[in-house]
Image 1 (spheres, one colour):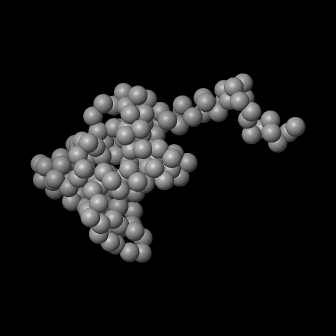
Image 2 (cartoon, one colour; image 1 turned 90 degrees about the vertical axis):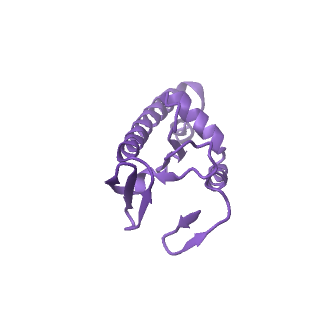
Amino acid sequence: MIEYEEADDYETTWSAQKVMDITCKEFGISLRGLIEGSRMLSGITHKPPIAIDRLSGMYFFPVESPLRKACTWIAHSHVLEVEKLDNHLTRLVFKNGRDLVLEISYATIINQLYRTAQYRYLLSNKMEHILEASQYVAESKWHRQHR
């Protein structure tokens, strides 16, 4: 697996699943927990997108079963364009100019992009409702500032 950073590229012997799980745990939750939560909220049972950190826009989608250790995860907000190369060959171009060719159909990638956008919307709406209701459930930020 290769991880792409703004300044440097480097290879790791860790599986993609392990990299994603460690990243998720840095934000206080496991990859499995995010997948289960996504399935519950969105109803997407196969290849559900996840939100590692909603506030910074860290939404990812898998290109195959997330249970596979070699599953590739794509950062939703980094995809600039998608190009169909062949029936089961698709090129992703990212905002930083890099590209990635995957052995997956164009339709599958487009579907994953749309499902992730829908998940972002559902999660955002849920968070808005929780924040609105929080004034009745817990001490809100507004109450603390105006005491």
